[in-house]
Every structure is written in C-alpha cells, then in structure tokens.
Length: 331
Image (tube, rainbow, N blue to C red; front, top):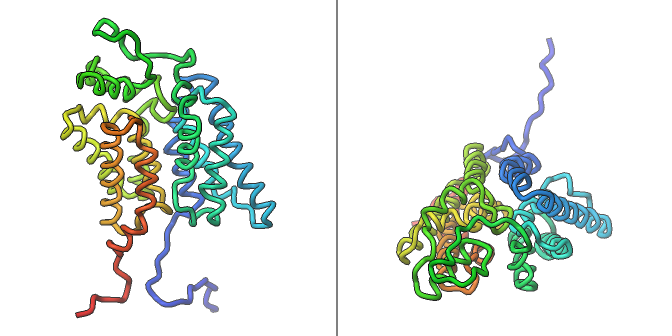
C-alpha cells in the first residue's frame, strides 16, 4: 500500500498561513460597505447611483489601462481598485459633478497608488488622495454640491437669530455657530437619530453611521481589521470634543469619522504593523480629526487627519517594532 501524495512546504520555521487571500479581504470590505452604499443610493436616488458608477468604472479602467501600457500583469481582479472606487464615491456629496468624480478617481489611482508600484506600495490611502485633490482644487464647487436642490433635514433655526444657513451639513452649521458666538443654533442631541439612520446632508458615506458601524464590526469579527485603530480613533474624537466643550456623541456620528475609522484608517498598507503602533496611529487620527473640527477652516477634517497619519505610519513602526520570531533583546 503506497503512501498518498501530499504537498509539503519546505522552508525555515515559523510557518504562518492565512485563510484569506488579498482578493477575499477586498471583497469582504466591499460586502461590509454594501449596506451603507445601497442605503445611500436608495436614499439619495439616481445621482448617488451615477456617482458610484463613475468612480468605480474610472478606477477599474485606469488600473487596467496602466497595466496594459506598462506591460504588467493585470491586477484589477484583486479587488483593490473596486474598493478604492467605492470608498471614493462615499467621500463625495451625491451631486458632485461627473467631471470632478472622474478627476478624483484618476488622481486616486495614478498618484495615490499606481506610480508607487501598485497595491502594497502606496504611501497614502488612494481614495483619500483623490478626495483631497478635488477638495483643494475645487473646494467651492464641492461645498456647494449638496445644496443643489437636494434634500435638507436640518431644522429651521432662522428664528434663533440666523438670517440664512449657507452650510449644507450639520458640521458646517455647528462650526459657523461656534465662530459667531460660541453657542449652537440647534440641539446637537436631536441630530443623533438622523445621523445614525438617514442623514441627507454631506457625502454618501454620511447617510447612516449605524450601517457603517455594523460593517466595521463585521470586519473586526472576521479579523480583517484591528479593533485598536477604530477604537483609538473614535474614542479620541469623543474625548477631544468633550474637552473642548461640545457633544462627543454628535461629533463621533457626524461627518466622516465612522467611514474613516473603520474603512480608511485601517488600510493594511498605510497603517502601522504592530498592535501598539496601531493604537497610537488611531489615537493620532482621532486627535487631528477632532482638533481640526474646532480650529481649522474645514470642519470636516477626516481626510487630512488620516493622510497626515499615513505619512507618520513608518515612523510609528520604527518606535513600535513588532518582535521578530527567534530573536530576543540583548543584555
């Protein structure tokens, strides 16, 4: 009786294997984002569907064309371009002009990812690179996008001394109130339910904080993302808001904190490798995000907070190096 043929791995220990491939991980991220994305399209309508289609199509086509022209193996099947397109669409308001979405997707893929060598080599989160580009290049157009005849759910506060509300989001109104007399013209606690379930202002990723939390918890339960980054991020935003005399729950739910904490800051390539480093990294993201809301001219500072910490990730890795297998500290 002959011994059955089995495959063996020949190499030095330790032998570490992971059940999920890179493609499977990307598809899990898309699946975790799907409830929020589908609800955004159902809530915002056809303009949201168009924005998702444009961002995803441009990201996929850009990566395919880049690989074709550079004579490299095609990588669009790994799912990373799909994730970038979905995330980019969720960082933009539903009525973002189509040409701006195209520009954001091109910059996200080319300058944010492909020029560095593709997946695994980029220094910054590609979707946030595209979002930062259009925010800095056409900030006025982007700020006006949610106001173009779209829905409003913010209560009428003109009777409290406001002649007109020019900002589209609750964060913009809150920032304007603080700049004028330090008091809010509306009850922040009244905004919890809309922000959790059906927020019709801001970007597509701000429609439902509850669905983003659900998706993030699924990724944590699957072991795809480390809980330390979102915990440090969200907890620090809450603490900063409380210290600066504002409602921490409102600032955690409003804006892009949930999308950034669970789906942007947790990017494998642009975040630290060690457990302690990830916690420090998450706290740093939350610190810059929280402080930026109160002192910067841009109340939605999630994009630049994460990009800044992306740049610090290699430095954090140097200070919090994971232990190498088989080595011990010297005396």
